[in-house]
Image (cartoon, rainbow, N blue to C red; front, side, top):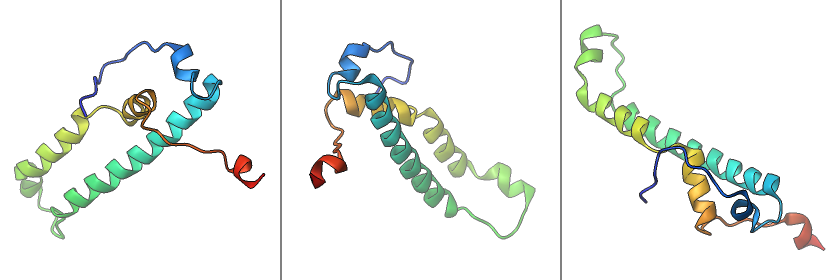
Length: 103
């Protein structure tokens, strides 16, 4: 998914269109952003754990270019909140209201 990492002005009417409440929409996007952030963190930690060393050799820290490239890749990615907002506006975000299901 190609997402513009820059700050974009959003139409609040469009953001609140699905739920009818801007705060509820922002809450949904925030929850999704937390999920994305946690997934990315787990993925990054998994990739970097391959480079874990029991020896604290300062030369190894500076010479590990693969590890640096992986870190830079994740730094350049759009923020989780930006990804979540794009998913929400594209209609790719599923949400439900548990209290309505029990009635």
